[in-house]
Length: 550
Image (cartoon, rainbow, N blue to C red; front, side, top):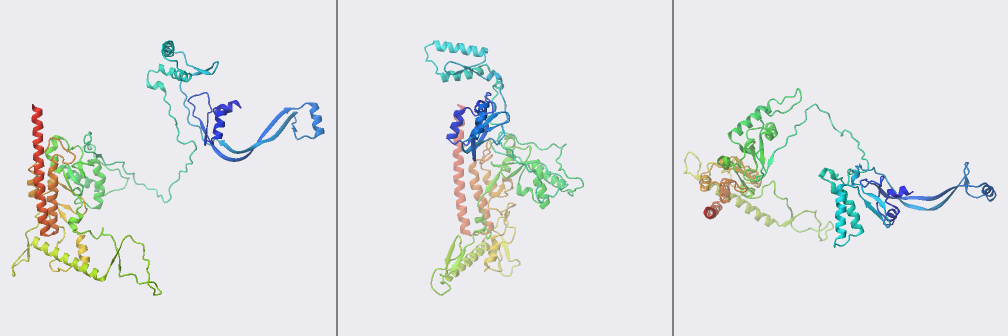
């Protein structure tokens, strides 16, 4: 019984766990090992009876008396008397259902031995040189004027003395608190998923895209060597009709022209199958910046636009991003993103019995009650806006001709390099229906070779073929090191640059002349402010350089 109590750290610990209703009871199978990992018994409910059984040897006179009194004690064939009685009712018990953790016992030099003393057990460590030195130091401390340590402090000092002989970290034998995260065996049922059909095709290669941050200190990744080209593994007998080789030649040719491409431009001229192959093959040839002036571009491996020697070419490949362009292009929210609104014409008409009352309608997010007169006025206002917009577009884009001339219209005001992909106006019908206007709103325009299909559009500086843009960028000099926001150019250059592109888009989609004049005034003010800020920055840099020189 004493050995059983040692596994639970004594009777007092067991009684405390029972009184506090502790859910776990640690049980150490090797109580003498300090590094022993215990089992954990769980507290469970039960309905059991505790029996007290006594076994004793009966004498001959007592056996005769037993026969006369007819007692309940049972006599074994060996002559032993067994007596059982109910000691109590058990409602809770601790059960060890889990497995023991992995055990790792440290070296014996770290195990202090217990030696019984007069009052309590004292710890005696191994006699090593370090221990003898520690004992001598403790004797000096005890004989000195310092206060005497307490009994608990002495026990801790004796436990730590074996570690004084440690010379390196491997001798410490730092054991983790737990080796295994679970103590109950998991029931693995490995089986094939339903609907699985075995195939003979090869597995896809485990290749991922390489992403870099602008401020990363790592160099640009190096692409595959010419003697080891990228070849996709295919199953025997499976032919892709040369799609991979054809796409690889196209991509390599484009990357030889320039090392940085926008994603939309790199896939021009490829069908759906070739685009799928290009996305897979580009992981071997290109990497991507997640931020900075070249974000959203495929960059050839081995080419780092952040290097000073690449500043002349890398500055032309910087990205200019325009955001929230849907309202600028379509003048209103497009039909695809318009919120549906329930409309109830008139007031409630009462219930089925003819009695006046409120009729509960369906649950909707937003309800707008309008009358027939308001609907007619709104429809008239929309027709007037469409007519005005059509007249403004024709007055800006088309120069009227004299009667009898050969051609009906001549384009004079539209930007020469920014044109929509479809017709912008139908001169034969000024009064368009609402459905026709919605179809016109869904048209995709294109400027500088980039389609305005999404709210956020990316442009490369070398692809913006505009005289005003070239004149504006020529007023700024490149910096010594690239920055996150401006790249090789000053940050003051980009706000007016974006406004120039927005002005070209507004003229292309046929905005009113008054709006174009307002945008031009705003652009001139932005240019003036940007040049002023840029001049102040140059003056500050010159002043700092002059102070550092002297």
